Length: 334
Ligand SMILES: CC(C)(COP(=O)(O)OP(=O)(O)OC[C@H]1O[C@@H](n2cnc3c(N)ncnc32)[C@H](O)[C@@H]1OP(=O)(O)O)[C@@H](O)C(=O)NCCC(=O)NCCS
Image (cartoon, rainbow, N blue to C red):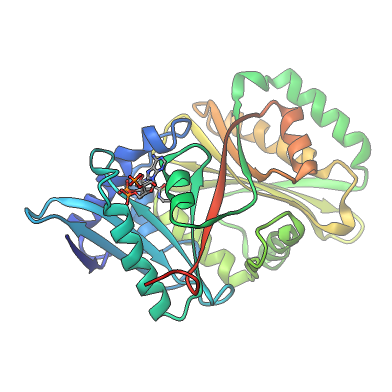
Protein backbone atom coordinates (compact mmCIF):
# COMPACT_ATOMS: atom_id res chain seq x y z
CA UNK A 1 0.00 0.00 0.00
CA UNK A 2 1.19 3.49 -0.86
CA UNK A 3 0.31 6.37 1.50
CA UNK A 4 0.82 9.83 0.08
CA UNK A 5 0.19 13.33 1.41
CA UNK A 6 -1.68 15.75 -0.83
CA UNK A 7 -2.93 19.31 -0.72
CA UNK A 8 -6.76 19.29 -0.56
CA UNK A 9 -6.88 22.94 -1.67
CA UNK A 10 -5.23 22.19 -5.04
CA UNK A 11 -5.67 18.45 -5.65
CA UNK A 12 -9.35 18.02 -6.43
CA UNK A 13 -8.95 14.42 -7.67
CA UNK A 14 -7.38 13.09 -4.49
CA UNK A 15 -9.81 15.10 -2.38
CA UNK A 16 -12.70 13.55 -4.33
CA UNK A 17 -11.21 10.07 -3.75
CA UNK A 18 -11.27 10.77 0.00
CA UNK A 19 -14.79 12.14 -0.25
CA UNK A 20 -15.96 8.97 -2.02
CA UNK A 21 -14.43 6.82 0.72
CA UNK A 22 -16.09 8.83 3.49
CA UNK A 23 -19.43 9.13 1.66
CA UNK A 24 -19.58 5.36 1.09
CA UNK A 25 -19.23 4.82 4.84
CA UNK A 26 -21.85 7.34 5.97
CA UNK A 27 -24.93 5.05 5.74
CA UNK A 28 -23.11 2.43 7.83
CA UNK A 29 -21.07 4.57 10.19
CA UNK A 30 -23.67 7.33 10.69
CA UNK A 31 -27.05 5.76 9.80
CA UNK A 32 -29.04 8.61 11.37
CA UNK A 33 -27.13 11.45 9.74
CA UNK A 34 -27.73 12.92 6.29
CA UNK A 35 -25.11 12.43 3.56
CA UNK A 36 -22.12 14.79 3.84
CA UNK A 37 -22.09 17.10 0.78
CA UNK A 38 -18.84 17.55 -1.16
CA UNK A 39 -18.83 21.32 -0.66
CA UNK A 40 -18.78 21.35 3.15
CA UNK A 41 -16.53 18.25 3.14
CA UNK A 42 -14.08 20.29 1.05
CA UNK A 43 -14.36 23.09 3.60
CA UNK A 44 -13.57 20.70 6.45
CA UNK A 45 -10.62 19.08 4.66
CA UNK A 46 -9.06 22.33 3.47
CA UNK A 47 -9.35 24.03 6.83
CA UNK A 48 -11.28 23.14 9.93
CA UNK A 49 -12.90 25.68 12.25
CA UNK A 50 -9.61 27.57 12.65
CA UNK A 51 -6.29 27.79 10.86
CA UNK A 52 -4.51 25.02 12.82
CA UNK A 53 -2.25 22.88 10.57
CA UNK A 54 -3.84 19.84 8.95
CA UNK A 55 -2.46 17.04 6.80
CA UNK A 56 -4.45 14.99 4.27
CA UNK A 57 -3.13 11.54 3.29
CA UNK A 58 -4.52 9.09 0.73
CA UNK A 59 -3.67 5.38 0.61
CA UNK A 60 -3.75 3.54 -2.72
CA UNK A 61 -3.26 -0.13 -3.53
CA UNK A 62 -0.90 -1.68 -6.09
CA UNK A 63 -3.30 -0.86 -8.93
CA UNK A 64 -3.63 2.76 -7.81
CA UNK A 65 -7.15 2.33 -6.39
CA UNK A 66 -7.96 4.41 -3.27
CA UNK A 67 -7.84 2.15 -0.21
CA UNK A 68 -8.21 4.57 2.69
CA UNK A 69 -7.41 8.06 3.85
CA UNK A 70 -6.89 10.25 6.86
CA UNK A 71 -7.04 13.89 7.83
CA UNK A 72 -4.73 14.76 10.70
CA UNK A 73 -5.38 17.94 12.64
CA UNK A 74 -2.58 19.44 14.72
CA UNK A 75 -3.99 22.10 17.07
CA UNK A 76 -1.58 24.98 17.54
CA UNK A 77 -3.30 27.19 20.10
CA UNK A 78 -4.77 24.82 22.68
CA UNK A 79 -4.07 21.09 23.03
CA UNK A 80 -0.65 21.39 21.40
CA UNK A 81 0.37 17.92 22.60
CA UNK A 82 -2.71 16.34 21.07
CA UNK A 83 -3.74 15.50 17.50
CA UNK A 84 -7.12 14.59 16.07
CA UNK A 85 -7.83 12.40 13.08
CA UNK A 86 -10.57 11.40 10.68
CA UNK A 87 -9.43 8.00 9.41
CA UNK A 88 -11.51 6.06 6.91
CA UNK A 89 -11.42 2.82 4.96
CA UNK A 90 -14.01 2.10 2.23
CA UNK A 91 -16.63 -0.34 3.56
CA UNK A 92 -15.75 -3.02 0.97
CA UNK A 93 -12.11 -3.06 2.07
CA UNK A 94 -12.57 -3.17 5.81
CA UNK A 95 -11.21 -5.89 8.10
CA UNK A 96 -8.16 -6.46 5.92
CA UNK A 97 -5.68 -4.52 8.04
CA UNK A 98 -5.77 -1.21 6.08
CA UNK A 99 -7.10 0.75 9.06
CA UNK A 100 -4.29 -0.55 11.25
CA UNK A 101 -1.65 0.41 8.66
CA UNK A 102 -3.12 3.89 8.24
CA UNK A 103 -3.27 4.35 12.00
CA UNK A 104 0.39 3.35 12.40
CA UNK A 105 1.35 5.86 9.71
CA UNK A 106 -0.78 8.59 11.25
CA UNK A 107 0.51 7.90 14.77
CA UNK A 108 4.07 8.31 13.45
CA UNK A 109 3.19 11.63 11.83
CA UNK A 110 1.56 12.83 15.07
CA UNK A 111 4.62 11.80 17.10
CA UNK A 112 6.94 13.57 14.67
CA UNK A 113 4.91 16.70 15.35
CA UNK A 114 5.48 16.29 19.09
CA UNK A 115 2.04 14.91 19.92
CA UNK A 116 1.53 12.46 22.77
CA UNK A 117 -2.16 11.75 22.19
CA UNK A 118 -4.22 11.02 19.08
CA UNK A 119 -8.01 10.93 19.08
CA UNK A 120 -10.93 10.28 16.74
CA UNK A 121 -14.69 10.25 17.06
CA UNK A 122 -16.83 7.16 16.60
CA UNK A 123 -20.45 6.21 17.15
CA UNK A 124 -21.12 3.63 19.87
CA UNK A 125 -21.61 0.24 18.23
CA UNK A 126 -19.83 1.27 15.00
CA UNK A 127 -16.76 -0.23 13.33
CA UNK A 128 -14.81 2.80 14.56
CA UNK A 129 -15.65 1.99 18.19
CA UNK A 130 -14.64 -1.67 17.68
CA UNK A 131 -11.40 -0.54 16.06
CA UNK A 132 -10.73 2.00 18.82
CA UNK A 133 -11.13 -0.68 21.45
CA UNK A 134 -8.96 -3.15 19.49
CA UNK A 135 -6.06 -0.69 19.20
CA UNK A 136 -6.15 0.17 22.91
CA UNK A 137 -7.67 3.65 22.68
CA UNK A 138 -9.57 4.98 25.69
CA UNK A 139 -13.21 5.97 25.22
CA UNK A 140 -14.19 9.49 26.26
CA UNK A 141 -17.45 10.79 27.69
CA UNK A 142 -20.66 10.14 25.76
CA UNK A 143 -21.72 12.87 23.34
CA UNK A 144 -25.41 12.32 22.71
CA UNK A 145 -26.94 13.31 19.37
CA UNK A 146 -30.58 14.33 19.36
CA UNK A 147 -32.82 15.09 16.40
CA UNK A 148 -35.84 17.33 16.37
CA UNK A 149 -38.54 16.46 13.87
CA UNK A 150 -40.02 19.90 13.15
CA UNK A 151 -43.51 18.38 13.19
CA UNK A 152 -42.95 17.60 16.88
CA UNK A 153 -42.51 21.32 17.62
CA UNK A 154 -45.50 22.97 15.91
CA UNK A 155 -45.98 26.76 16.17
CA UNK A 156 -48.54 26.47 19.00
CA UNK A 157 -46.12 24.40 21.11
CA UNK A 158 -43.27 26.85 20.47
CA UNK A 159 -45.54 29.76 21.45
CA UNK A 160 -46.40 27.96 24.69
CA UNK A 161 -42.71 27.36 25.50
CA UNK A 162 -41.79 30.94 24.62
CA UNK A 163 -44.53 32.29 26.95
CA UNK A 164 -43.26 30.01 29.73
CA UNK A 165 -39.69 31.22 29.26
CA UNK A 166 -40.66 34.89 28.99
CA UNK A 167 -42.24 34.78 32.43
CA UNK A 168 -38.80 34.22 33.96
CA UNK A 169 -36.69 36.12 31.42
CA UNK A 170 -37.79 39.55 32.56
CA UNK A 171 -35.35 42.34 31.74
CA UNK A 172 -33.98 40.75 28.57
CA UNK A 173 -34.74 41.52 24.91
CA UNK A 174 -34.16 39.31 21.91
CA UNK A 175 -32.20 40.27 18.83
CA UNK A 176 -31.25 38.26 15.78
CA UNK A 177 -29.14 38.52 12.70
CA UNK A 178 -28.78 36.43 9.55
CA UNK A 179 -25.28 35.49 8.40
CA UNK A 180 -22.02 36.38 10.17
CA UNK A 181 -21.90 38.11 13.53
CA UNK A 182 -22.02 41.90 13.15
CA UNK A 183 -18.74 43.56 14.15
CA UNK A 184 -20.21 45.27 17.19
CA UNK A 185 -21.19 41.91 18.74
CA UNK A 186 -18.01 39.94 17.98
CA UNK A 187 -16.33 40.32 21.37
CA UNK A 188 -19.44 39.34 23.24
CA UNK A 189 -20.15 36.41 20.93
CA UNK A 190 -16.58 35.22 21.62
CA UNK A 191 -17.28 35.51 25.33
CA UNK A 192 -20.46 33.45 24.89
CA UNK A 193 -18.50 30.81 23.00
CA UNK A 194 -16.09 30.69 25.94
CA UNK A 195 -19.02 30.33 28.35
CA UNK A 196 -19.42 26.66 27.47
CA UNK A 197 -16.01 25.90 28.98
CA UNK A 198 -17.84 24.61 32.03
CA UNK A 199 -19.88 22.09 30.00
CA UNK A 200 -18.73 18.49 30.57
CA UNK A 201 -15.71 17.62 28.42
CA UNK A 202 -13.02 14.97 28.12
CA UNK A 203 -10.34 15.01 30.77
CA UNK A 204 -7.15 16.79 29.79
CA UNK A 205 -8.63 18.42 26.68
CA UNK A 206 -8.39 22.20 26.78
CA UNK A 207 -11.41 24.13 25.56
CA UNK A 208 -10.95 26.52 22.61
CA UNK A 209 -10.27 30.11 23.75
CA UNK A 210 -12.39 32.16 21.39
CA UNK A 211 -11.76 35.76 20.43
CA UNK A 212 -13.31 38.06 17.83
CA UNK A 213 -10.80 37.07 15.16
CA UNK A 214 -11.37 33.33 15.59
CA UNK A 215 -15.15 33.82 15.44
CA UNK A 216 -14.80 35.84 12.22
CA UNK A 217 -12.47 33.26 10.63
CA UNK A 218 -14.72 30.35 11.55
CA UNK A 219 -17.86 32.03 10.27
CA UNK A 220 -16.30 33.25 7.04
CA UNK A 221 -14.90 29.81 6.36
CA UNK A 222 -18.26 28.08 7.02
CA UNK A 223 -20.13 30.54 4.82
CA UNK A 224 -17.60 30.11 2.00
CA UNK A 225 -18.35 26.38 1.98
CA UNK A 226 -22.12 26.57 1.79
CA UNK A 227 -23.26 27.02 5.38
CA UNK A 228 -25.64 29.79 6.35
CA UNK A 229 -26.19 30.88 9.93
CA UNK A 230 -29.29 31.90 11.86
CA UNK A 231 -28.67 33.45 15.26
CA UNK A 232 -30.75 34.70 18.18
CA UNK A 233 -29.26 36.46 21.20
CA UNK A 234 -30.77 37.74 24.44
CA UNK A 235 -29.56 41.15 25.62
CA UNK A 236 -29.71 42.32 29.20
CA UNK A 237 -31.74 45.54 29.07
CA UNK A 238 -29.97 47.10 32.05
CA UNK A 239 -26.37 46.62 30.88
CA UNK A 240 -26.71 46.06 27.13
CA UNK A 241 -24.63 42.89 27.52
CA UNK A 242 -25.42 39.82 25.39
CA UNK A 243 -26.35 37.19 27.96
CA UNK A 244 -27.36 34.24 25.76
CA UNK A 245 -26.88 33.09 22.21
CA UNK A 246 -27.98 30.27 19.94
CA UNK A 247 -27.03 29.51 16.36
CA UNK A 248 -28.39 27.12 13.71
CA UNK A 249 -26.37 26.27 10.63
CA UNK A 250 -27.98 25.32 7.33
CA UNK A 251 -25.80 23.51 4.84
CA UNK A 252 -27.07 24.14 1.31
CA UNK A 253 -25.88 20.66 0.30
CA UNK A 254 -28.06 18.98 2.93
CA UNK A 255 -31.62 19.94 2.09
CA UNK A 256 -34.18 19.44 4.81
CA UNK A 257 -31.65 19.56 7.68
CA UNK A 258 -30.55 22.20 10.14
CA UNK A 259 -27.59 21.83 12.49
CA UNK A 260 -27.67 23.26 15.96
CA UNK A 261 -24.38 25.00 16.64
CA UNK A 262 -23.63 26.83 19.87
CA UNK A 263 -26.19 27.55 22.57
CA UNK A 264 -24.72 29.36 25.57
CA UNK A 265 -25.84 31.45 28.51
CA UNK A 266 -23.27 33.50 30.47
CA UNK A 267 -22.88 32.12 34.00
CA UNK A 268 -24.22 35.30 35.64
CA UNK A 269 -27.44 35.09 33.64
CA UNK A 270 -28.36 31.46 34.17
CA UNK A 271 -31.64 30.44 35.79
CA UNK A 272 -33.84 32.86 33.79
CA UNK A 273 -34.92 30.43 31.05
CA UNK A 274 -32.76 32.29 28.53
CA UNK A 275 -31.49 29.04 26.95
CA UNK A 276 -35.05 27.93 26.21
CA UNK A 277 -36.10 31.41 25.12
CA UNK A 278 -33.37 31.89 22.51
CA UNK A 279 -33.71 28.35 21.16
CA UNK A 280 -37.47 28.63 20.73
CA UNK A 281 -37.12 32.06 19.12
CA UNK A 282 -34.55 30.69 16.67
CA UNK A 283 -36.85 27.80 15.73
CA UNK A 284 -39.63 30.30 15.12
CA UNK A 285 -37.26 32.37 12.98
CA UNK A 286 -36.16 29.27 11.07
CA UNK A 287 -39.78 28.33 10.27
CA UNK A 288 -40.18 31.51 8.26
CA UNK A 289 -36.58 31.82 6.99
CA UNK A 290 -36.38 28.26 5.66
CA UNK A 291 -39.54 26.16 5.99
CA UNK A 292 -37.90 23.36 4.00
CA UNK A 293 -35.84 22.43 7.10
CA UNK A 294 -37.70 19.48 8.67
CA UNK A 295 -35.06 18.08 11.03
CA UNK A 296 -32.51 19.60 13.35
CA UNK A 297 -29.49 17.78 14.71
CA UNK A 298 -27.91 18.69 18.03
CA UNK A 299 -25.26 17.10 20.24
CA UNK A 300 -24.55 17.43 23.94
CA UNK A 301 -22.28 15.74 26.43
CA UNK A 302 -24.42 13.12 28.16
CA UNK A 303 -23.97 14.86 31.50
CA UNK A 304 -25.04 18.32 30.31
CA UNK A 305 -28.40 18.09 32.06
CA UNK A 306 -29.55 21.70 31.69
CA UNK A 307 -29.11 21.76 27.93
CA UNK A 308 -30.60 18.30 27.57
CA UNK A 309 -33.67 19.28 29.61
CA UNK A 310 -34.24 22.22 27.24
CA UNK A 311 -33.83 20.02 24.17
CA UNK A 312 -36.22 17.39 25.48
CA UNK A 313 -38.81 20.01 26.36
CA UNK A 314 -38.67 21.26 22.78
CA UNK A 315 -39.11 17.71 21.43
CA UNK A 316 -35.61 16.51 20.47
CA UNK A 317 -35.14 12.73 20.77
CA UNK A 318 -31.92 10.73 21.13
CA UNK A 319 -30.53 9.33 17.88
CA UNK A 320 -26.97 8.16 18.65
CA UNK A 321 -24.12 8.28 21.10
CA UNK A 322 -20.67 9.29 19.89
CA UNK A 323 -17.39 9.50 21.81
CA UNK A 324 -13.86 10.48 21.23
CA UNK A 325 -11.39 7.55 21.37
CA UNK A 326 -7.94 8.58 22.49
CA UNK A 327 -4.69 6.75 21.96
CA UNK A 328 -1.69 7.38 24.21
CA UNK A 329 1.12 7.58 21.65
CA UNK A 330 3.80 7.30 24.31
CA UNK A 331 2.47 3.87 25.33
CA UNK A 332 1.92 2.59 21.77
CA UNK A 333 4.55 0.17 20.44
CA UNK A 334 6.05 1.41 17.19
C1 LIG B 1 -12.48 1.96 11.83
C2 LIG B 1 -11.93 1.61 10.46
C3 LIG B 1 -10.90 2.65 10.05
C4 LIG B 1 -11.21 0.26 10.58
O1 LIG B 1 -10.59 -0.04 9.35
P1 LIG B 1 -10.20 -1.54 8.97
O2 LIG B 1 -9.36 -1.49 7.76
O3 LIG B 1 -11.42 -2.39 8.91
O4 LIG B 1 -9.33 -1.93 10.23
P2 LIG B 1 -8.45 -3.27 10.44
O5 LIG B 1 -8.77 -4.28 9.38
O6 LIG B 1 -7.02 -2.85 10.56
O7 LIG B 1 -9.00 -3.79 11.85
C5 LIG B 1 -8.17 -3.93 13.00
C6 LIG B 1 -8.98 -4.49 14.15
O8 LIG B 1 -9.96 -3.53 14.58
C7 LIG B 1 -11.12 -4.24 15.08
N1 LIG B 1 -12.28 -3.90 14.26
C8 LIG B 1 -12.30 -3.34 13.04
N2 LIG B 1 -13.57 -3.22 12.61
C9 LIG B 1 -14.36 -3.72 13.58
C10 LIG B 1 -15.76 -3.88 13.72
N3 LIG B 1 -16.60 -3.56 12.72
N4 LIG B 1 -16.23 -4.44 14.86
C11 LIG B 1 -15.39 -4.81 15.84
N5 LIG B 1 -14.05 -4.70 15.75
C12 LIG B 1 -13.55 -4.15 14.64
C13 LIG B 1 -10.80 -5.72 14.94
O9 LIG B 1 -10.20 -6.15 16.14
C14 LIG B 1 -9.81 -5.71 13.80
O10 LIG B 1 -9.00 -6.87 13.77
P3 LIG B 1 -9.57 -8.23 13.09
O11 LIG B 1 -10.20 -7.85 11.77
O12 LIG B 1 -8.36 -9.07 12.94
O13 LIG B 1 -10.58 -8.78 14.04
C15 LIG B 1 -13.05 1.47 9.41
O14 LIG B 1 -14.07 0.61 9.91
C16 LIG B 1 -13.68 2.80 9.07
O15 LIG B 1 -13.25 3.46 8.13
N6 LIG B 1 -14.69 3.22 9.85
C17 LIG B 1 -15.33 4.53 9.68
C18 LIG B 1 -14.47 5.66 10.22
C19 LIG B 1 -14.02 5.48 11.67
O16 LIG B 1 -14.80 5.11 12.51
N7 LIG B 1 -12.72 5.76 11.90
C20 LIG B 1 -12.00 5.52 13.11
C21 LIG B 1 -12.52 6.20 14.31
S1 LIG B 1 -11.76 5.59 15.81
